[in-house]
Length: 362
Image 1 (cartoon, rainbow, N blue to C red):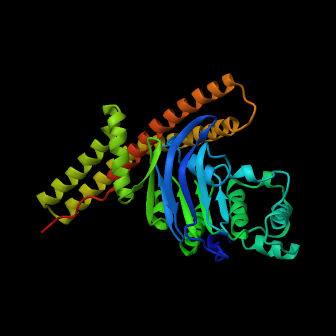
Image 2 (cartoon, one colour; image 1 turned 120 degrees about the horizontal axis):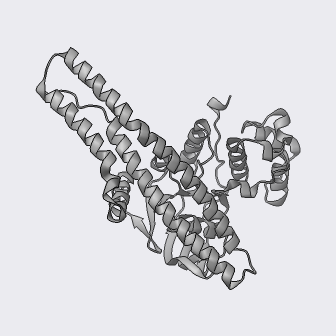
Image 3 (cartoon, one colour; image 1 turned 180 degrees about the vertical axis):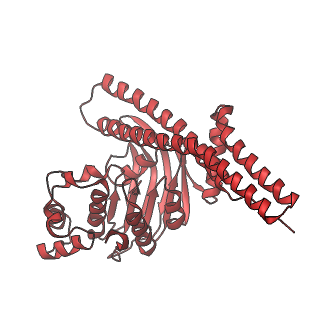
C-alpha cells in the first residue's frame, strides 16, 4: 500500500570533491541578472538548504546549476564525474503526457542510462507503486502525486551524486513526502534543497545558504533564526495590521498563565482550559482559512512566474516582449513576497494560538 511506500537512492558511482564550484557566476533571464558574482563551492556529502524570500533567485540558481538556463556570466566548474539529479518545481516539464511510466523509463535507460531490459524497468517501477496496467497508462491521466513519484523514480534510476531539488514536496502526499525525507537522509551524495517545507529542511539539511539582495551568503543559524530574520524583514515592510493575529495568541497565553498562577481547584482549571481551547479554535478558524487562500495564491503566482521565466529563456523575443515580460515578472515577484510574508505571519500566529496553556507552577 502507499502507506508503507519507501525507496532509496543507490550509492553514487563516484563522489568528486568539490562536487562543483561557482566562480563569478551571474544568473537570471534575458540580460537581467537576479544573482551577481557568486563564489561558492559545494562539497561531497554536503546537504544545503537554500533560503530566501520568493523572487530573490533561489530557483534561478538551481536551474542554472542544472543547465536548465544558461549562466549570464562567470562559470560553474563541475567535479569530474558529476551526475546531477534535478527535481524541477514544475516537474511536469520533464514528462510526456501521452506516454506511460514504462515508456519514460525505457527512454531514460536508453538516452541517459544505466541501460536495462524491459522487465527490470517494470520491476523498478513496481517499487514506486506503478504496477500492472499503470505502467502503460498515459502520464497525463495520473494524479499530481503519482506524477511526482514517477519523477522521483527517474531521479533514482540515474544514480546522481548531486540532487538539486526545487520544491519537491509541492505535489507529494504525506507518505511519499516521508519516504523522500528518509531516502534523502540515507543518500551519500550532495543535496541542494529549495523548499517551503520547513520540516523537510530541518530533517535533511545540515547548513543553509541565504539568497538575498542579488547575492548568496552562508546563513549562520537554524530555521528558527531564519524565521525570526524573515519576520523582521517583513515587519520592516508591513503595515501594523499584520501583527494583529499574534495579539490574540498572546492574550490567550496570558490568560492561561494568570489562571495557573491564581490556583483554584483542578475542576476549575479544566473548565478554564476547555474555554481557552474553544476560544483558540474560534480564533484559529479564520486564520486557517486565510492561510489556505494564501497558499493557493502563492502556488498560482509561482506557476505564472515559472511560465514567464521559461518565455524569457526563449530565443528570438523582441525588446518590447522582453520588457513587458520583465515588468510582469517584477510585479509577480513583489506580490509573492508580500503574500509569503503574510502567510508566515499568520502561521506564526496560529502556532502561538495552538501552544498549550502553561501548567500551574509550584
